[in-house]
Structure formats: structure tokens, C-alpha cells
Amino acid sequence: SIKAIESSSKEDDTTWLTYWVVYGVFCVAESFSDLFLYWFPFYYAGKCLFLVWCMAPVPWNGSQVLYHSIIRPCFLKHHQAVDNMMSDISTKA
Image (cartoon, rainbow, N blue to C red; front, side):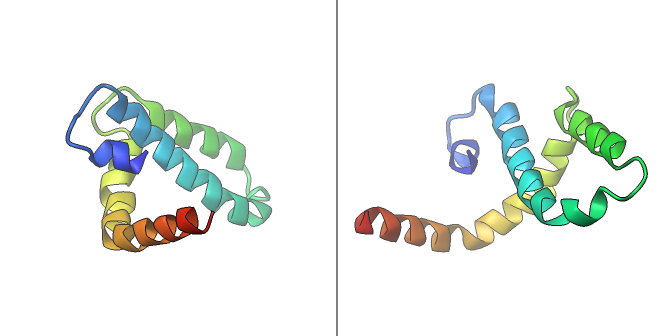
């Protein structure tokens, strides 16, 4: 999804691809932190509001904000190492 977002041909799918990248990162982070966070009051209501904010049809929605401020810089910093690892895995397979 990140490769599709960063490709030169921009289409309508960029908004939803951005959402799914943010949602995927959120799910991975939540799998580690959910053990502790579910004890907090209104955790599930906050989680629901966060996901609604990520899907909101406005230019400053959560998926755009989080992708451009956190995920994209991290990806651009490490994308060459990820590409090398994926090519090594496909070669071994």
C-alpha cells in the first residue's frame, strides 16, 4: 500500500490506501498495548472515535495526519532496507 501511495500515478484510491496503512500500523501497535490499555475507562469509545477520525472525509483526517507526520518519514528512512529484505526473501523462496 505504501508503494502504491508513493507511486507517480495518483488516483482516488490514495485516500483509502492511506487509511489502510494507518489502520494496519494501529492494529500492530494495539496488539502489543491492548493488554494494558483495555483497563482504562472509555478505552473502546476512544478507539472508536480514533478510527472514525481516521475515516473522516476531511483533508485533516487522522489517516492523512498520521501518515504524513509519522509513517511516511519512517518508511522513507528505511525503505531501502525493506526492499532488500523482501528481495532476499523472494530469492530464497
